[in-house]
Length: 144
Image 1 (tube, rainbow, N blue to C red):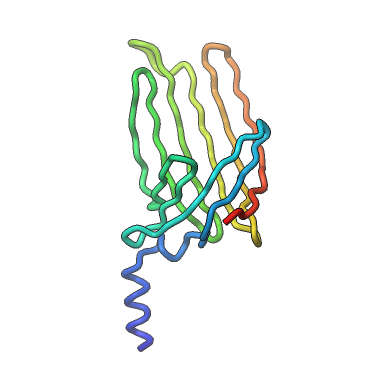
Image 2 (cartoon, one colour; image 1 turned 30 degrees about the vertical axis):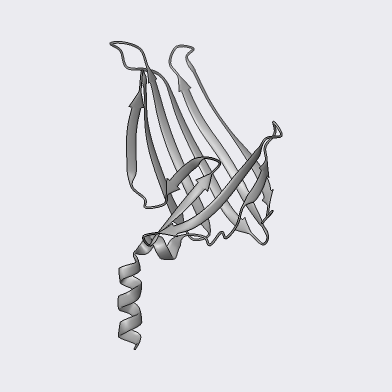
């Protein structure tokens, strides 16, 4: 029986065991007063998080895309009680390298009956010769 359980856990994959179990929607109030709905589901054995209308598959894989003069890479993953989403965005001009790079990290962690949301960023603006960073933390109470 013990060998069977170990086999089942190995089949489930590391992402299925390492993601927080968030079983509802949370109402996040940002500094601007906007609300953010967050929900979770398990699809094909992989945790999937929906933040407003955006869906994140917490499989730890990097995904890249571009639109116009903007390129970005995203990665969603879990570790312990934390769901983390990272995005790096490169803004560029025709025929040149990036003039601005944004690195943003979003962290969601369930603490009792609320979700704690953290956003941190590091921006390099080559045009202005500036580099800055910041962080904000918001408590998201359970609404369902």
